[in-house]
Length: 188
Image: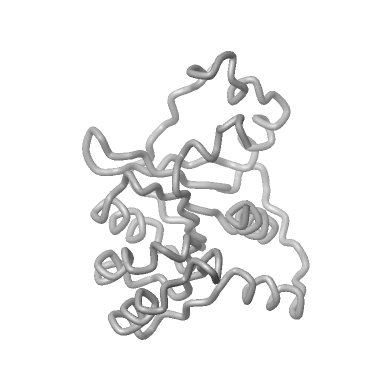
């Protein structure tokens, strides 16, 4: 659930998040990192080594926050830092503690501000970023029927999102999810 805390923290500062799934693959991740110019990434610790190649081209990333200390493989962290010594890599608990020690007033977003950019799998070409504004998040929370399962296989009232050609928000926090089902799974 730390990804949700990261998303809430970013929203409290009007910072859009960008989701990336493992289905994007190395090229898709590289493309999404370059397009959004993300400066911070949150991911599961076991995925650190998978960033070595994408970060050769995606130069904007400055900080990586990994989820659980117990999942950290020191050799993977060392390999990442050897390949990209400019990066600052910290654990979620270290980031949380820094927030406790340095509280910041909220910077509320407007309804028109970008809340999230979700990347498609790219099954018909390059992955595309789907921009979701804060007003859409609020609207979906008022009427959650579009993510409420009517049975175990289908969801009602799903709309096809628009795909912008180039999305370059001022600031981004990249929050990859291990599985897109985490966003809509009724089991948790």
